[in-house]
Image (tube, rainbow, N blue to C red; front, side):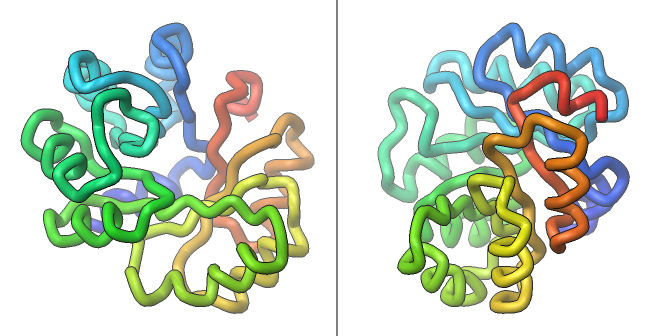
Length: 188
């Protein structure tokens, strides 16, 4: 199951991150987009949002921390697994990543690298074995290189990526792909 996710990321290193219905509809028009990060919704509409993405033959990754009505407990992952066709989850919480792994879902562990303590915390990511580690913000090539050397988990990066050079810098620094809500980046 993991190979499908890796292959999709390799096929197109730009991941559409959608934060509203307009962004969702726009990303569905982009045939080259293979993976979609869902950054909005609630327990009532998340099954419909995921269905649209899966029907378009794209990998649907739900950021469970951002879905209204879900808690920070493992039952949130169980809900996504049982009630949607999502391929996986994104979370900043280790317990949710671990639960998704138990359910054989794809996982992206998201870390905001805001200081040296957060940077040091990336050393422990290998313990939970996410499919990908996503580093935010994504415009820090030196930090991306450092984290790539500290961990054996494939890297994604996102946040504040606006220009083609931002994408190139992140990929050259060792990220496998970037995620962006900026629709202009989806065309790069």
